[in-house]
Length: 424
Ligand code: UD1
Image (cartoon, rainbow, N blue to C red; front, side):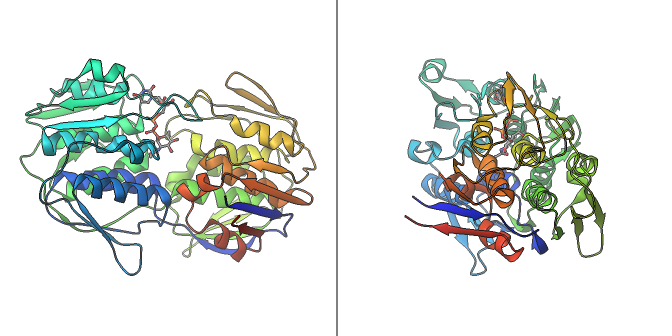
């Protein structure tokens, strides 16, 4: 098993280029099943989740070819497509459920075994299924009780759908399905994340008619056929950018972040400024300075976009452990996303939790320790903590980090971080 060895480091300085967004590329890759023509996707990050999605599409009968530059992927789903997603791939990545709507449209049926609950919460799919049912999909309830989504439909018909919660995955599955349904679908209380907008832009390039993506009401006029896409650039990863922004502030450094869209990071920028960061946009990118002011405490509450992103909760908590005073973090998106608290406490953070609320006393001098990457973002967060802790921090279970941060170690090392990956 590989691990990271992280030493207390000098302030991060220099520049870092952000990769394409993991959470944008995965649904876009799933959407390629909606046509038998080739789709070329650019700025695809080299990540384990992307590899799993490529393998899933290949197992269903599509071809996925990476260009020599490794960041362009051409997916062609011509020929026979299978309706059955293999469990050994689905269990590696919950986002496999994103192929649900596209598979039903392509083959009339989709069989996807659901993995059990994961570390950060139950992550059910009832909203995806409720939306698809409203479009005419029939769900085999007996199979569902056994943990297998077995959904079928000969044709889909547009409808008005209200989501009880603005689920990102449900919004993506429903807009993919509604794109080829007969008539118009109105999706209310839809997720507004930038990744939804990127998917809608991609689908519109395929010939779909989607309006309102990025707001809470999305209108999809069904079309008869979708075509291939000659080129689509994936948006930059706002969570990777946010992680490096926090790293710059925590280490009291100064980092130029390239390939970043500040509009996608308004909540993170506002909170970092409250903490004392100086953030400016230039023609080259975003400059984040943490070397001019002390780190102030602040309170955060995670919310669906445009609120503070749950995926930035653990990196931000890492920062608050060394802020000048106490802070409160409230997690409202996932029911069990404080697994990292135990790891921060091993380093001396002394955080207390009560339900979905964490109280971080701040003002600590952290000590290096043996810690675990309890999930993808928490893995990055403990690495950042290791950069400011005395001595050595050993991070295990780093396969979580490989799922979502491209070249994490080399990007950090280029900024002066003292981190190395050890294969055991
Ligand atoms: C996506 C992101 C993930 C991010 C999350 C929230 C991808 C691949 N992953 O995950 O990084 O943390 O959005 O921003 O894009 N829920 C239900 N019923 C449902 C669906 C969801 O109760 O049918 C609940 C979930 O349990 C969770 C919350 O809604 O508590 C958010 O889930 P959702 O927005 O669906 O997140 P994902 O699409 O899984």
